[in-house]
Image (cartoon, rainbow, N blue to C red; front, side):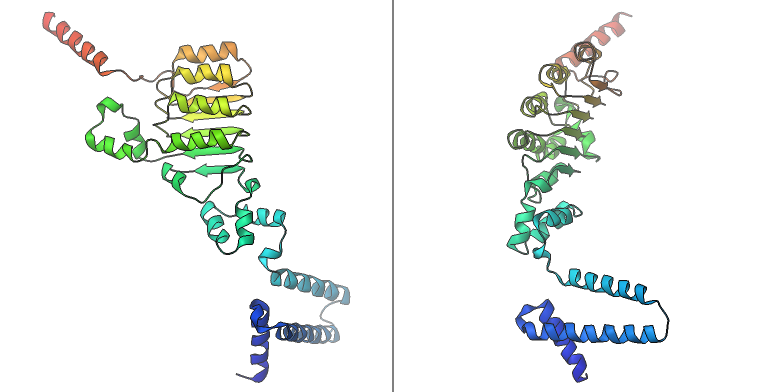
Length: 296
């Protein structure tokens, strides 16, 4: 390896790794400047390009170079937050573990105005921050396990109960934290959360008084009590969706339409589904059918 190559390499390492000193970094910049000037002179002499274009190209080159050489931690808080906004939750956390400056940006509540979770297990991770800046929360679970969660408790097998016991309280506990820490929430979407109850949703309506959009999809334990809470506590609500919630009745929907006509209400398939029933009711129906068959 020639002496010039070694010198340039050490100068580059002096920039990327400050332990090599400032003299090598300055030498690298000087060599780079001489190289660029040499290329510019050759191009101008050969009349390959115009001088105004050449000057503009040189300016853009130096600007891009110095931006590249700037350390990430030298950016201000707003730039760091903008940079973090392009990363997912795991990438944000991994980057925050590199230094204190990036950790401060990770913990800034302004970074976490939107949270999206695709399964209840993601609620256990420490790759997000709850705070007053949270505006939009989505918990959407689209999995075959949702079918197991939607089975009535008295009809589940021991294996199905054991499967549900591992996550049945995750969403409820998380919503409790949201109630205490995120009073400025504007929209809430819960899809496939088969274990949340009326109490969970009503607590959200009471705590998040600015909530404007409530979307519940395939939440089998939600009943007309939530619709009554929409009328009583949802003073800021503009849109309510209760799709594929089998324990929602037409009576509850009609009550919302009458008392809150300004709310856009959607209930796809909800009022037309078969609601849950108690084991005693099933037993009475079976006995009644048996009697009909016997005496017919």
